[in-house]
Image 1: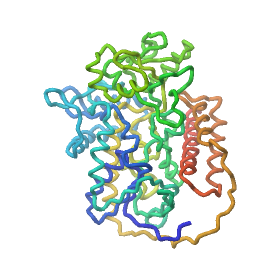
Image 2: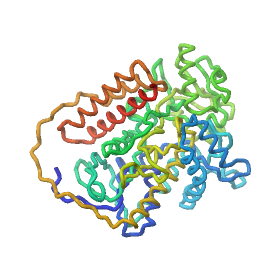
Image 3: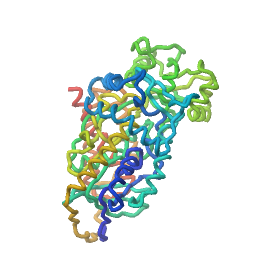
Image 4: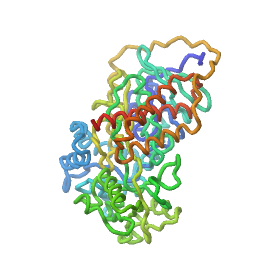
Length: 508
């Protein structure tokens, strides 16, 4: 245990993705005396945000578009399970945040005439997605990160993970694993920007750092978790070399390579094993139906044909257009033996995004005073049952800014200070109450793939939920020293149990 008094901050931000970075920039308006700490699990440029390909959905001009259309498209994609107020906040405030990041150096593609180039993606009724080729998230993270690193009142810890959090009078006390060492830090306000939960699945487009730590910490702090079974499976992850297996070839614990929604927006056809377009059997919007519709259609077509080979074909757009619009995807596919200008691209559904999460209000406040959440780990209600393509990056901007604004207001109004516990006295290590079995993470992932992949498996779900709940409770009660691998696996067990329990409740 720690014997050194914890370092004290006004705000601690967990995560260095787009939500965390933009929150820090907005918190800097509080002046140099506001002490900020940001924890990055790996290097600060590694996050789900940096992998986002498509773009930012925003009604920048209303000559051929409108806020009302963007709202309606979001509601339709979300199966009308959205929080309408959150949708309206995103749609009306998002364009201004897009302009702000452009002022900070973020570059979006432009037409030869100098206007912003707008693309189309599934579920959108208008071209309203601004983008930076097919690396929009990376462009945004790369351009905002230097501004954050230049903040004189911000401390950034790399390779740092908060493994536990507890409420103390006036704030929070966190135990942090950093560089193989354990420290304690305290704060008045805690902002969770920890991203997704994709590593609960064997096949995911999420990076390896996406183990649901923020959801688990919030749950253990007593915050409300909502709609965690609202998991999005992207229909077109690269699946080269697949032979009747469900998922991405050779993925293991690595991220599946995503073939962006924008390919279908720019005219790519979705083909079955025989090279036939098939979406007409399942939805009148064809390839431009929302992601959940297309993923379910692929699974139904696989059942109909008895074959699991599916492809995207964008060859008709020509080599020059394809290489100019999708250079990163083209290069990554070529490295895997597929020439997107000449070949079909093998694809299959893969876990991609979490619509549920730590429940927050319109100011990103959780049910625990002083605890906030923004980005993918938060449940704003914006996405409903399925996220509309390219609504995630603007959500990260809008709701992290709103969190920062609310924190600054609360910090200015409150005179309450932290009441730190005394330094803990070292205790001799006790023998482990339970020794985790080998490949516990793989066990969790296999359970999830079987119990809930695109469709929930009603026969398997109840037993799987009970098994994961028992596993989480046993791990949490064990006396093993908390190492990063164990802390991440604990998060995965917690999140997996919550997903399946919510999925079971949704079926009732």
